[in-house]
Amino acid sequence: MKIYFDHEKLDVYREAIAFCAWTGELLNEITAKAAVKDQLDRASTSIPLNIAEGNGKFSGKDRARFLEIARGSALECAACLDVLVARKLAAPEQIDSAKDNLARIVQMLMGMLRRFSERGDFLREDAGEYGFEHEHENERGET
Image 1 (cartoon, helix red, strand yellow):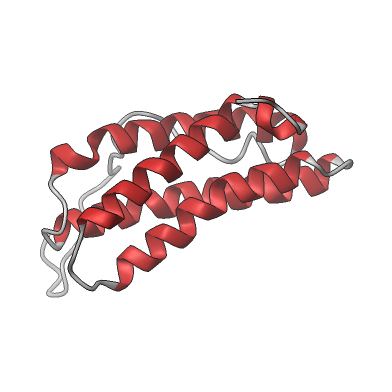
Image 2: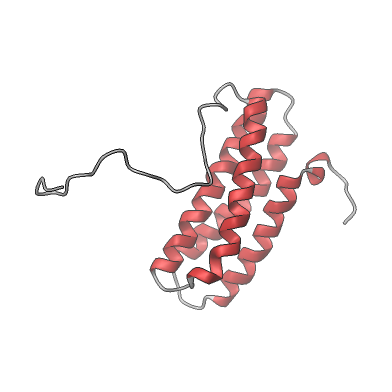
């Protein structure tokens, strides 16, 4: 692909475009009507659009704002994929590689945010499992 703009040189942008292509194929396979399909379509489209727009900004603060939006959209896509699995509209093995792709996108965006945002060090997205420091009580006060 011929490169016309600076954002097209970014690995994170190319990964986001690949995710968009994959998402389009998945959405075409799902025949059931579900709001999450539209949400996944919008959120997956938002990732590369915000990367491109942010990359075109001159100030670090403006650039960081769009990269944060792209990161949020990537996390939203991961949740949409989980909803599709929970509603049995997609199989877990069907989305595994896409979630790997999203994890790479988030990691790359985090690297960029650490460079352009004073809040970059406070944002955190590790590849490991989330843990709980203590047990949570249920509605009846039981642990």
